[in-house]
Image 1 (tube, rainbow, N blue to C red):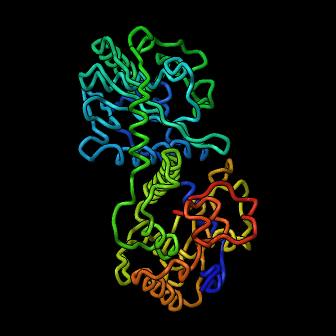
Image 2: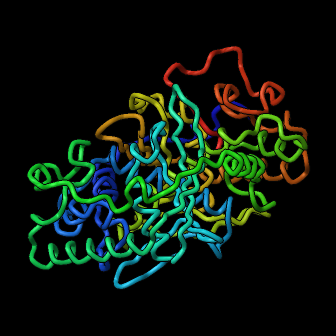
Image 3: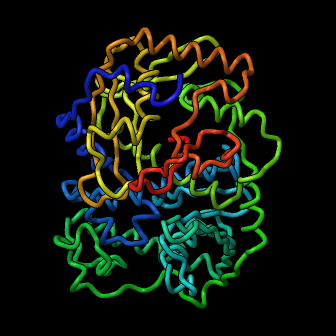
Length: 450
C-alpha cells in the first residue's frame, strides 16, 4: 500500500479558529516570578517590565527565538552531560541562578544568529551572566558554549570559550548592588534608577513603556580587564564528536516508526556512520528542541486542556497527546507561505499519517494537526480538525506495518517516505523512496522526524 495513506480515509479537514486563537494566547502567557534571578540582573530595566507588565507580551517571532534556544539547551545538555550536572540551581543572598551545566566549572550555553569576532564586546551580557554564575559557585573559571543557529544560507556552528574571572568577589559585590537597586524599583514601582539595558535600540518588546531612553548606562559587571577569554577549539571538537555519535535511545518501536517504516528498517541495518555529522545533528536538535519548547509553552498557557494518554499496539507502547480530548500533534514546517488546505495532505502526508494512527489507537474519529509556520513573520498558527471515516481500517494498516517491522521484512516491502524527502535523507537513493519528480518548490529544509 504505497503513496499517501491517510488521505484516502479523511472525510474533511476543518480550520479551527477557536483553538488557534486559544493556543496563540497560551504561547504568550507569562509565568509568575517570585525571586530575583541572575537573568534579572543582566538587564534589570527589561526585567522590571517583565515583572510589572505581564500584559506586554513578546511577539511570536521573538518567542520563537527564545523557545528555540530553550529547547536546544534541553537536548544539548542531556547529550553532553548527565542529569546530575544539568541545570544546577545556585543561590546567594537572595539571588538565584540556574547554570546550564555544572560539573567541574559553571557552563553557560547560548544560542545566537551570529558569533562576533570580538566575543566580549559583541556579547558582553554572556560574560556578565557567566561571571555571576561563577560568583555564586565561588569558582573563578567558567565556560561559554555558543551555538550559531542554522539558516538557509549558513550552517550551524558551535564554539567554546574558557573565561577566567580575575575578581569574582567584585562580581559578587556588583550583583548585590544591582539586586538592591532592582528590588527597590519593584517595591516603589519606579524604574527611574535602573540603568539603560542593552536592548534599548534592538527591538525590545517594552520600548513603548520603558524609560531607557533617558536612563544612564550602568557600570559593566565584568570589565574587559576583569576576564581572560580563551577560545577552546579542542573542546568544541570533542563536543561535536559527541553530538555526532549520539544515537536514538531505546530499542522499541514507536508510533513514528509506523509513519516512516522503510526508514526504520534501514536504520536498523545501518552499521556505518555515513551521512551523520555534528552540524546536521545540531540542526536536528534545534528543530526538535524548538518543537518541544513550543509544546511546553502551549501546555503551560492552557491549564487543564492538555493530557497524555497511553496507547498500545502489539509491541508498541507509546503516548498520545490530547487537547480538549482530541488527539493532537504539533508540527513546525519551514515553508515560507501557509499551505492551502487542499494541498495539506499532498505536501505533508506524514503529518496526516501520524495523526491518523494516533486517532485510531486512541479510538477517536477526529484528530487535530497544529501547524506553526516558523518561517512566516507574525501570524504563525493554523489548527486543523481532521475527521476520519474509517478508523478501523487505519488501525489495521498500523498493525500490518508493525507486523512487517517485527518480522524484519525487506525495506522495499514497506511503504516509502514521501518522495521529496529523499533529498534530505541519508539513506537515499538506496532507500528507493525517491520519484523522478522534483520535490515541491515550497519546501525548505526538513527532518524526517517531522
